[in-house]
Amino acid sequence: MPEFSFELEEGFAPSPAKSYEPLERGDYQCIVIETGIKTTKAGTGEYIEVVLQVVDGEHSGRRLWDRLNVSNPNKQAEEIARRQLTGLCQAVGMDMGSKLANTEQLHDIPILVAVDIDRKDPTRNRIIAYNSMGSDAPSAAPTADEATPSNKKPWEK
Image (cartoon, rainbow, N blue to C red; front, top):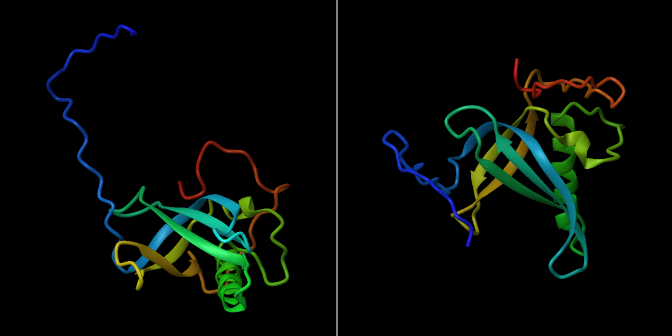
């Protein structure tokens, strides 16, 4: 067994327990921090799993998840996912006619996410819309060639 020495000191109280209650209904400033394409549980389709992180306000650091059924036998599920994905793309600054070649194009760009309580499971949130941070018209997202490396995150000034 490895030996280890640790002395309890005053002033270092244990961290308070985190709350996993769903966020209240409202708009939250978020960024997409992770995306992945996964196979549905039934194995009959695929979805994009989107992991978002709240970056402002009292809930900063909290995470939200969305699943966009981009390939599904249920065509209504596909339609809903395509609308949500279109909204997400526009929120990060992509113009109509643009092509999403890689889901990482959605990462690290501040957006407003409209959140509600899930009707089927009140212990969870559901994302009802994605909106851009600024004006009503989304600005163009920088291309990979235009992006300059920086130690700052896009939401940091």
